Amino acid sequence: MVQITPCIRCGKNRIISKTWTEKIGESKVVRTDTVCPDPECQKIVEEQLQVRNDRMRQVQEQSLKRRANFRRKKVDIVLK
Image (tube, helix red, strand yellow):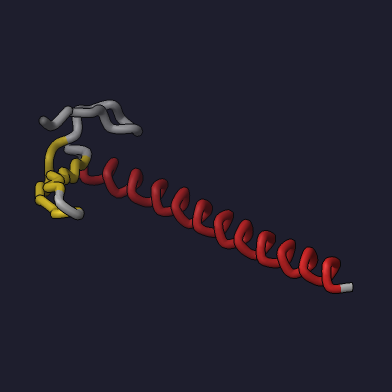
């Protein structure tokens, strides 16, 4: 069952651009990729999502570095 969702930028109903199935473990999953019917709007949305994803990736990397440093400091304190 595919739900039609509005574009996050312009509010128009998104259209299905691609549908495929994947097998994950023993389950069969149907994936659907939707896009805005306005190509210029879709391009802007993709740029916004890319910025958001880049920022999220950067935050996750910084978090992993902080955790690694904290673990090293904790080990140093225990060893002293």
